[in-house]
Length: 105
Image (tube, rainbow, N blue to C red; front, top):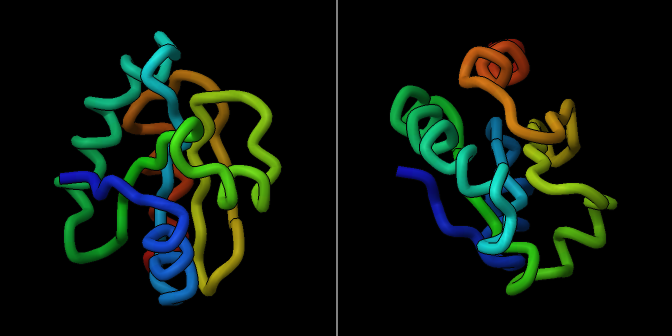
């Protein structure tokens, strides 16, 4: 199950050095709602290998600002505390896996 991050918990996950996937979304965003089940599937498939979660941009805005999120949905891929890659817009599970797999090394 995908973690529901807030600014603090997202920062802790990013600073852990582990591979982290964060979906930046909002309740009023149609494509974000459609991406939700894809993020859940990614979280289940990579449980124990990567930290996968979501952050509502209307509730927690520090991480949003720090990472220059301008469009949603945006999915950021972190490793060793740094953004390694991103996807913007509605994407497929395979697109997310293509960006996450190299970070699992």
